[in-house]
Image (cartoon, rainbow, N blue to C red):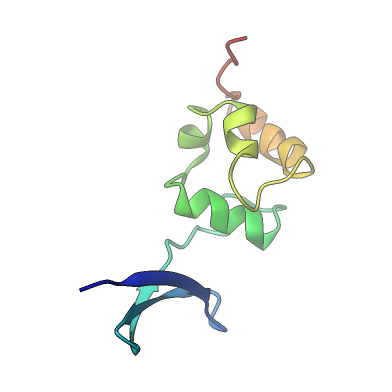
Length: 101
């Protein structure tokens, strides 16, 4: 049985849907995305918050275990997010993981 999957954004911000196609029949599976505590990552745009949540980064301490380069690879995190994240890390006396060249 062949199948293919398509991830579709939901009008409900906290949900995504996986649409699986099996022989012309569709099966919709609702898969809630991980939700981030908005208070932790204040000042970030929603796409960046979702990217962090989906990567399992739900605290500033976890964020400190990643380099800037790794965070920028997340879909939804752009260069404008880095100063905000650096400030949040500095407030907790933390920093991004050192980048190896």
